[in-house]
Image (cartoon, rainbow, N blue to C red; front, side, top):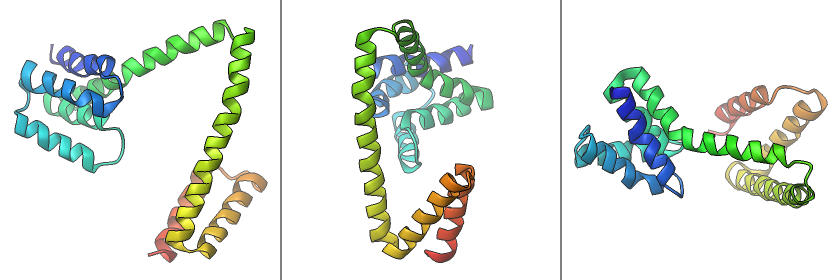
Length: 176
């Protein structure tokens, strides 16, 4: 029964917490502290602080930790799944609708408008990354990594994971 409670404690805030993790934190607190009494307010605030200190979405980190505390590894898995399940269900539902109407003129127009916007957003993000890298690491290191990465990815078709790992190693050795 604990796994059902873990699932409900994180699934319901995921559905009702419009706005992502920060919006669902009070709802998670209501479930964890008030409803199931798994943690005190003080313990919950410590869990929140730990979650904020780590990278990634806050709700999933909290679901994993609290789920683990209550039900071990299976509890952590149930908590994580319950946190992502509302988004997963909605995405599958919307994908089903999109596939049903993919030949519709409205959907084709929407796709035609969205693609360039996404391309511009990715371009702006790339520029910001390059600018931050040049300011933080220097223009020559940034230029070197950019050219080497471009050649490895486009000319020699090296898997991106290896390129990222190589860049991390380069940064660890030369950019301390």
